[in-house]
Length: 198
Length: 223
Image 1 (cartoon, rainbow over the protein chains, first blue to last red):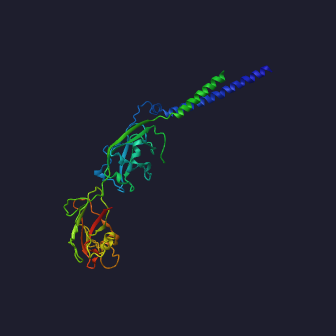
Image 2 (cartoon, rainbow over the protein chains, first blue to last red):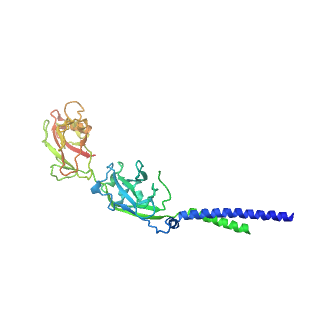
Image 3 (cartoon, rainbow over the protein chains, first blue to last red):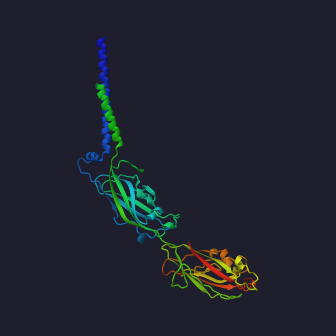
């Protein structure tokens, strides 16, 4: 009787140990997977099999996009001015557009009277542009988080179409103001999140 | 003992998993498109002159004068020139007027209405516009008929309505029915618009206005 009880207890111990070990291994594997996915250096090293990561982009054109000598003056209801800005992947890992910002100089109040729309143009035939931001230009000074539509592979380019206009409701307070804006585009690696509609 | 060790390891692993899940790290790269200049235009900024060559000011005075006027007297044709000095084009011009009457002092005995200054419209009804043309290189609009002789168009907006139907257009009627949607003066140096006008003190004006001074203000608005 005693032998039987001891044998049963031993079996239960072995069974529990196996269950705990299984759970532990599963948890450990999951932890390691998540950690690797969120640590770019580790994952990149794994992905690129030892190749050094070059994470870099360029904007084109390098000259200013907007200038009154080319575009004319803004006034309430004036024609919208649209320019294209290309974001080129000159590194060897993919990235995704994740943020816009702007720094203003001069009559910065003008930024409150101007609207801006930024869309990521499609690359394929019939692919719709993806709206990244639409709002007051001045809001860009604080930085706007956006979700780029696609991950941009190395040596590929994505085009941002930037449209600026002064709405008809703008008042006289913007009259004659002039300012300079530096528009910043930030991309991220890894381009994990797919913010766009494919 | 084994259970305790395993339980501890399990907790550590679970905690690691949670920390891993909550830690989202990215590399980022920022590039800037610099030196973008945005400039809001000025205007419309209408300036007037008595000459097509300027000087240009915000207002002109003494364009149409008739000293010691009697019923039937008429001014010479006089012109006001317009130019938009704003950096953005305007779309239309509006023309209207306002006026005041000043009673003479001391009162003339024959002035049968010593209070015309309280109701200047009564005198304005006798100030007849005998000629009014709004013109530049592209339009030549007779504001008494609304007809543009260059394009052949006729528009009610360009015509002062004869409110009392007497066949005469007075300053009172111009005030009642401003000229609207006239083609605006442009911002280019060589584009100057002018208004030619002549005013007559109506023959039918009676003694109510004897000795009174009629002060006319023409109002030009760019839209």
